[in-house]
Image (cartoon, rainbow, N blue to C red; front, top):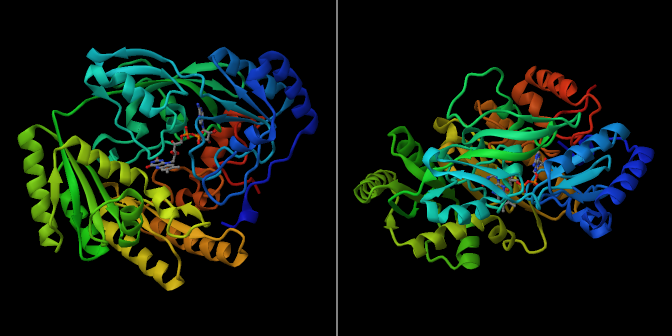
Length: 471
Ligand SMILES: Cc1cc2nc3c(=O)[nH]c(=O)nc-3n(C[C@H](O)[C@H](O)[C@H](O)COP(=O)(O)OP(=O)(O)OC[C@H]3O[C@@H](n4cnc5c(N)ncnc54)[C@H](O)[C@@H]3O)c2cc1C
């Protein structure tokens, strides 16, 4: 996938001018057209160039979202939902211009039902805000992408993170949602029942749709009880292969780890200096267990024994909250720490995921490829899910480096697909991975296109994303 392959979307100048006029009048100060704010709303954390929208609408209600989508539909203007902009594949870029719908002011927590372990929130509520709000209830929402993302954006990208090995992804944790569809009508996709066999699963159709089918305005989420005890720690290994094999054994033995994260030696070097961690500069697993006091102690002991079998250890674990928080803060800051390995470089984060039995093979082949190509590219991974990220640090002003990185990424994505895996475990397709979708899903792409055409016949919802351009 080369930059030149990014889907092109034609600009509709006349329509855009008409919608800008309508929204200025309708929203006043809540509609912004300044260059800085427009660029910020297309900001991508990858090397994909910024493609700014023509205006940014700070919406406060579902009715306002409906009005904007209706105006955009009437004038055939793209409309791009925006949470906090932490997505990594050019998701919020506006290749044909249009209106960015910023949901950050839709930040009300509408209901918490502790007896049913669920809550309903507006789409702009962030995961950290929700967990702060829930603290006194003894409940929490477990999905934790590194960034403090919006729950609407997390649903739209089918996000997960370090806890997914135990609690699942957004796919498993959204009971229903309300969205404004391309025709300006709203749909609520379900009730609060824990399960439902009522027809097509519209909730899951919208989860992972990256704003290409509708704009989510509220979500009903499953909650979990805060565990009685939490323990965790870091275990070094002699090689990345040994660490991966310890993960495979842990998962295959059914140890209910809450988190088990791979950090390779280069990433460990970055984390040691950036986050002041005192561990060896070798491949490590960051592990956490949730349960009763006795349960977490037993799980930690069993994991320690498995690690030893693969030459790992010592596994130093703790139940002290402050120490655990420091570790996981360092893990969540991995992206930022790795940037210090090559100051001035930009990072491209890959996101392959393979069946757990192929995890060691995929990671070791990839590390060998990195060495052979001479890339600066640390690895972190949600190892328990078979998902890992290579952060390739490159000079974006050097076309040769860009081409080399693209070659590496293509090889990695095809390696994972060849192992019955996916090019994206959690970040989504956006613009950056459009070229790999057909390799992974074949005719499935045509079915997706049929759905897109049926629900968004004017192609106004986040055009140029997910689906390759029709030939
Ligand atoms: C340092 C770092 C670490 C990360 N780690 C992880 C990780 O561990 N796991 C993971 O899954 N992701 C991770 N990410 C990626 C990112 O945090 C997720 O993709 C997140 O879910 C995006 O949410 P957002 O609010 O930032 O959405 P945005 O970036 O604003 O939008 C993402 C996409 O969703 C659409 N969208 C946003 N809001 C809505 C809505 N209300 N309705 C419909 N569509 C909408 C947008 O149009 C866009 O296509 C990481 C990112 C960074 C920067």
